[in-house]
Length: 97
Image (tube, rainbow, N blue to C red):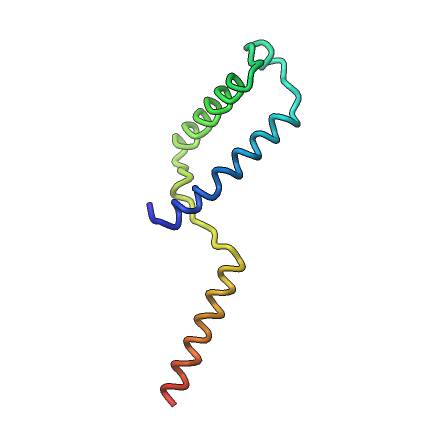
């Protein structure tokens, strides 16, 4: 795994945690959760982690690994990189003339 992917997941993890917490606050407790006695935050988080693992295992059986998906580059970073490369090319053209 390259450094860019590691940074991507490090940056994404807190966002996913916050989204999960918001989802828990906004989603009414389903009958299944009441039936399984998921009344505390720890129990709900444990069930959430278990469900995520099950989904990940199912995707793995289909040959889909999230680590292997291509990393998307931020548009602004791409624009800055292209602008920088354009300036370098312009300097090289001036040197050749």
